[in-house]
Length: 194
Image (cartoon, rainbow, N blue to C red; front, side):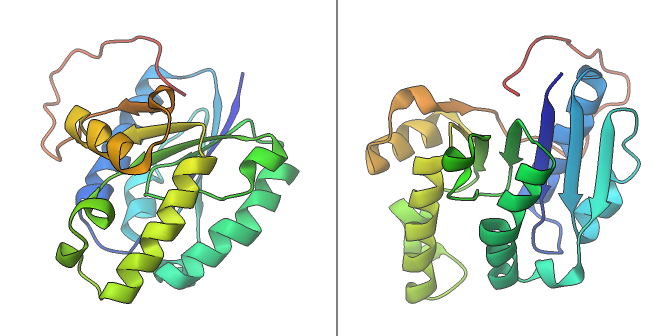
């Protein structure tokens, strides 16, 4: 049994990352009943995940984590020590970044990269040039420090491998989901990457 912690803190608004994390964790809760999960989530993500039960514990994060600057500080400086205290085996970071020092702490890091825009077309990002450059530097560091990187498509995976020169073996992909899943579907139970 692994102790898996999930940093699901993000901006408090629905978007692609919101659908991705909510759908993914709902599906994992159906498939995996043996590992212990602790999820830190804020805002609408927390509201959508708080009903997970059995081997899932969902913790409401403070409102200040709605802001990217404070979320970054919390993730880089406070979260690693929480993981150490909780004796975490794995940190799953589904929202584009992960703590830089997890390798030193011997905690496996799995990160999801939702967008390649910082490397391919930073002008299309919804913020200015300086923030885009800074985010690219931080994301590069997160990618290098992660043990596994999940992209949202095979194309995105191939593209980011070319742009970063990070070893192909660290990458995999899981396609984006939808908010309109059929209630009458069969669940395919199989081993997965966590």
